[in-house]
Image 1 (tube, protein in one colour):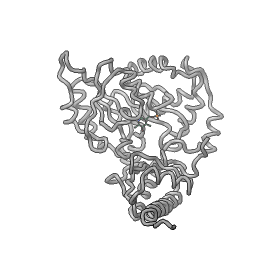
Image 2 (tube, rainbow, N blue to C red):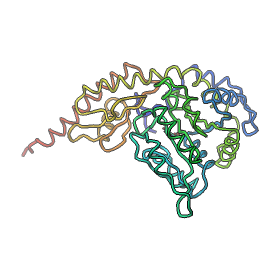
Image 3 (cartoon, rainbow, N blue to C red):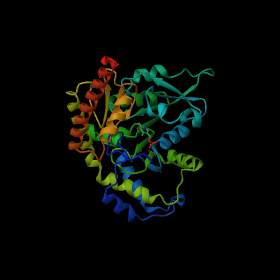
Image 4 (cartoon, rainbow, N blue to C red):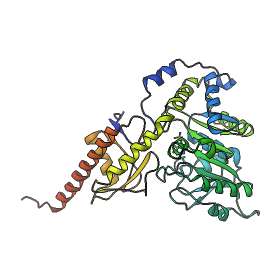
Length: 363
Ligand SMILES: *Cc1c(COP(=O)(O)O)cnc(C)c1O
């Protein structure tokens, strides 16, 4: 097993559960959720119905299962789903929309994962027997691949209005919806209001070890529950895991603005480091994408050396692009340390590549 990195900037999930969270998990009351008898699952549902303003909630092991179940409830094989061309559900869910729902995807060319109502209008297929049936409009708030940027509320509402006018269903991939709320102060329920279904991750940002939820009408969740059963997602006593989610929602939501502050600090400090530049126009939430510009240094080379020399882990998102994400384990001191380490590693790699090129062989 590879060692756990000393500092993990790879993602906003898997921070270490705090002693208080572990305590809370231990004391959770549990029951058989397959018979709807788990009190901690019900506690989670009551918190989330209020948080998202939806009638019903379903607890799931992962956000991927949430998105894919939503697609299966909303669509039939042969249908088409409109989403941004860089959406998570398109690129990181193992082709599940095609493999499970049998849906094709119409990938819109948005700006950093955010597209317009006009683009949706233009993408809707004519209703005839030759065309796939346009069925669902899918929005990702925040856009992961866009660099954690937020959809402006009005633009999101314009998109869902066009969907409704055309009798299309709407799904919100809100893996990081709570981070959008922390960044904009717009309640999660306001973002969720114009969607038929919403998924939020409980293991991102707020730091539960496992879990996501799907929210919607009673009718939608009844169907979603059937898919959860079919896919083998029904669990006996998931209250222990749900307890961590309850704890995370009750205690860690207030810490999300701190994650965003740290990410912005990281972006600011990196401006003065040679050989790296912010890929995004600005940092809106907890994600930063950086482009490595130092000569002869690749993202992978930088990532490997940073981990080897400093025990700091970052993500590789392209030949020259790295991702650094803040999480509950990150402090301001760690940010300063990561920036100093980046400066040193880029300097070292750039110099060694120059030395290699100018070195004259001895003998
Ligand atoms: C992480 C993520 C998901 C999927 O969540 P998992 O729990 O990892 O399956 C879906 N959408 C977005 C935008 C994500 O970042």
